[in-house]
Length: 212
Ligand SMILES: Nc1ncnc2c1ncn2[C@@H]1O[C@H](COP(=O)(O)OP(=O)(O)OP(=O)(O)O)[C@@H](O)[C@H]1O
Ligand SMILES: [Mg+2]
Image (cartoon, rainbow, N blue to C red; front, side, top):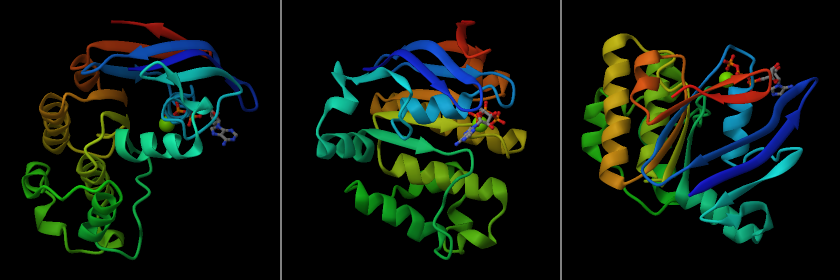
């Protein structure tokens, strides 16, 4: 479904060196590695937010960067959902407005049961700037699920959360995958979460090593 071939990328030093990865429909993959090893960079490249120095990314066997601009935008808008490490919510808007914007863009509607599942129903009408880091993180997760993407790219989605809330988020993500037959590519330090995935990789010295 998503296939990355021979990705290489460099900032001040090589971040990715000839990395290959494929994500099948309904499959979940966890990426681990120490801070600064390039996990977020890899996730952004796989989600086609950042163009690698070399290598190709295929979606349903089509090389994404060779498609028309419109097709590329449609894939990002309707098929991909990205949960960023630093949320990127629209500040100055309420949590509900953030979700509504996403729903409108993807031509979907907000699912009220989702808000309950990750315990954000009680803060949904507050401005996102008044929310805690963990609440903002959950709003950003709900915003992505509202789009009903085929692939979720999640960058440490439980990073700011206590155990109970992290569990709610994990279960919600995996329920979503089952309900929507979606795939997940997740960066996480949480062993339990990584182990829920079909495959686990570690990024080390710009190489991607399969652990599971
Ligand atoms: N836009 C950029 N310009 C220059 N260097 C960058 C850029 N983005 C990331 N880097 C560098 O690339 C390296 C990998 O960064 P990245 O954010 O991918 O790591 P990470 O594994 O996600 O780390 P963390 O676990 O702390 O989130 C870091 O040394 C970082 O400083
Ligand atoms: Mg990161």
